Amino acid sequence: MGRRRASQLLAGYRQFLLGRPTPSSHEQSISGSYWKLNTWRPCCMFRVSVGTPQASNYLNLGKTYAIKQRSFGSAATDIPRNPAFSNLNADDISYFRTILGERNVVEDEDRLSAANVDWMRKYQGSSKLLLLPKSSQEVSKILHHCNSRKLAVVPQGGNTGLVGGSVPVHDEVIINLALMDKIVSLDKINGILVCEGGCILENLSSFLENEGFIMPLDLGAKGSCQIGGNISTNAGGLRFVRYGSLHGTILGLEVVLANGTILDMLGTLRKDNTGYDLKHLFIGSEGSLGIVTKVSILTPPKLMSMNLAFLACKDFTSCQKLLLEAKRALGGVLSAFEFMDSHSMDLVLSHLDGVRSPLPSSLYNFYILVETTGSDETYDKTKLEAFLLRSMEEGLILDGVVAQDINQSSSFWRIREGISEASVKVGAVYKYDLSLPIDQFYGIVEEMRNRLGEAAKVVGYGHLGDGNLHLNIMTTRYDSDILAQIEPYVYEWTSKHKGSISAEHGLGLMKANKIHYSKSPETVQLMVDIKKMLDPNLILNPYKVLPQSCFN
Picture 1 (tube, one colour):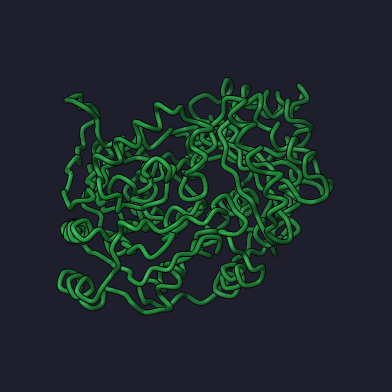
Picture 2 (picture 1 turned 120 degrees about the vertical axis):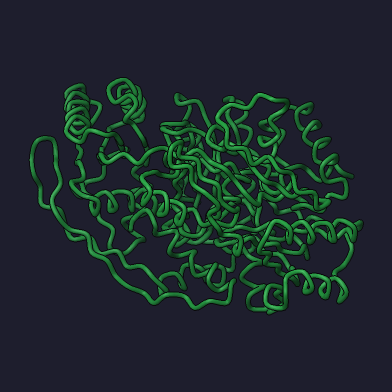
């Protein structure tokens, strides 16, 4: 429920893209009691409305607030269309129909309109063609033709990204893998799943849970995002602190290159040290080097014991110390350590219907979600309770509650995962996804608050367990003067403090020209050389990831 809210709002996009009706709206209720530091407190009724009406309002914010990212975002400078690219013609469309059939070559304006814009309505292209292949061979034929004709393409999954990486900049042909959603196999001894790149993350999670396993990746957009897109952006998510990066859990890939070559690296071995491990080139490449069509991934066993605590801290120093203590006291059962400041909490409570704080109404300065996952319910709960009581005695925790069932866990996660949704209801949102040393984690939030004053609302939240901060700066409308105060200052500050300007969202269109804040000139040049080698005509997701000046 709570963890799926963003997914529910985005699911209609996929159904519409495929020409299917969207489900009707419904309501779900959450109630009960929860454990609070050795006492019981009755839990308020939570009503979480989900479905079409809210999704409609949410996805139409572009009209409400007249959002135009090309005028007021990191992609503010209009990027000229590459004159080397050809224009789509009738012969091209006829060829694609012979490959895919009439139904899967989409020229309908309404469906194209949905595919041309990102879910936040910040980036919008003008593609005239959407292709829906059903196999790797069809993707190969599409790319072979586009490469020979120099037709630019944009690979698209669930279109849930935040940096403009999955929508056209100009008239690129959209290749969406929504129909490539088959599970190929599951090795039930080793927990190795092989599936197609268009599989929805939540569908994979449901399938695996029924088989006694889980996906090592969990995202708020799991109901819409595709595993191929997750891999292409090297998505992080909520389980990163436990299971690490996709670079560690992906065992093999099948990738179609720009010239149509199907690169078979779909191994299922835990160890394979024969030559260069090329799959890592494509993990996080954002579709600029090839299109991921199949994946083999190592999936952990499903553990039956899960506990979730919602905690309040007085200052950020306490949050840092609490993280260290959690790692020491909880060890291998620690599966999530999420962070929110009071401004984030206030934002969610003010702008999302049915969401209430499980703690008293007075706002604390910082909030932490601590999740444990293990195999012994009694042992794990005892361990967590001992950690919480000790942390309270040491003054690291001011208040806290422990969920008593899955409904309460969902309501806790709803608060954390509702921040992004709530932020767009304010109006214009400037989003920054940063990796920072833990001791510098909150510094940029305070800097931007002082820098912008009353002109903007600044919130900080994210995955404290792995040093990933989500910095959201909100104003009633996009404004070039506000943007000038934010950028490049945010990037300069991050670079100065040895951080990364993209922790898990990728670079896309938004930050392609900002890569030098995190990577050396020599590193960027090697990336450019690799791009030119694998995609000499530069047709794959052009204008993204790397600065266009590198290719002029």
